[in-house]
Length: 433
Ligand code: DLL
Image (cartoon, rainbow, N blue to C red; front, side, top):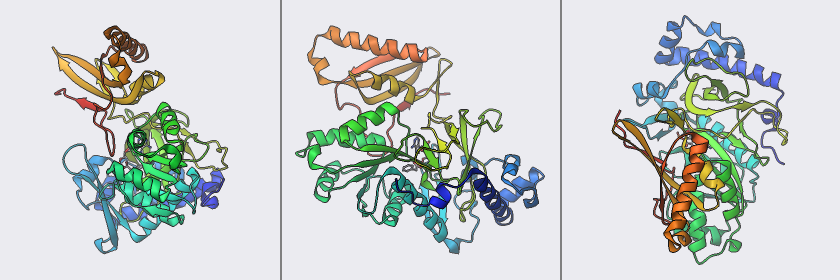
């Protein structure tokens, strides 16, 4: 297995901690003197840059949130003069203004470096033809993967998201061997290939680099079977850099975090106390090398756990498990915490259902209701009604036994649920709080 940057990707733990400590010290000094927001916050905690000497001092420092970025919209948290910023991206905010992120030339070069590590780790190489079907534009997916793919010397196809027929045609004509897109779009592409004049055997796909939204192991199996490729999970968020914060290697056993640049912690989202390795909690990142928008203990709201053992691939970089969802994506239905991914797992374990589903949350007579719409094979609709009824009951029972929650299941015909070209929308919450 090839490793792009053996020095950092296989560094001994103690050496990594020393490196992180030095970089953290430098970063805290930069934000203290260049970003009024951070200076005030550190002062409020009675801290000065001298209080940060080693990586162990990280836990003393205050957290940063998406709201802080929004309050300082658009450029208020940048740590360099505007003349040094060469790019901005923005992620759609859940409410109101978008979150704006900036990059210096060195930030862009660091970003390409980490994405190059991801692609090589995923099994891509110089001779590959990389089709980038993440959106280009303010979203970081397209351009993020783009520069990493060019960096490893691959032929890079900046097709962006959507335009499914053309995706498939170019995939065949150009012989694309690596596909980068969201996992939900990968499934949609698979389905569209089945209906296209081309067969999978005419395609040359080998590796998929899928991320930007949560997906399950079961979904991975389906995508790998349908597209005949190895499906690799890539993680990132605009605030931290974009795609490439972490990525699986060919072993597919957790995503290696590029912790020489992004120091991870897991905290209890309620008490904000750091949790020991192996426990599930909220992922927090400190970016120690980023120049334009350094982030101190940024709360991602993503829930996962970290593993520090050396991977079979030889990398020592800490691995994060697939995200279990976000602490704020979690629905509370009649007091029960529900993640869409839990329902997805139940559906994908059953052979009769498809991974295309939609959850509709509402409230009737002060009681939360959850409806699950899921597509089932056409054959079921040709069968007797009783078959449908049996299947409906089965799904209901499986979900109830997993979640302890009753759900109204509505079976719908194939292709009725809107397909996504980007991030899938799995939940519609009509409750008014
Ligand atoms: O989604 C960056 C990205 C682009 C990652 C392409 C991977 C591939 P944002 O739009 O800022 O950035 O959204 C970040 O998406 O906090 C997670 O909740 C979610 N997310 C990203 N990757 C994964 C993943 C991009 N592999 C938010 N698994 C993050 C689960 C993911 N969730």
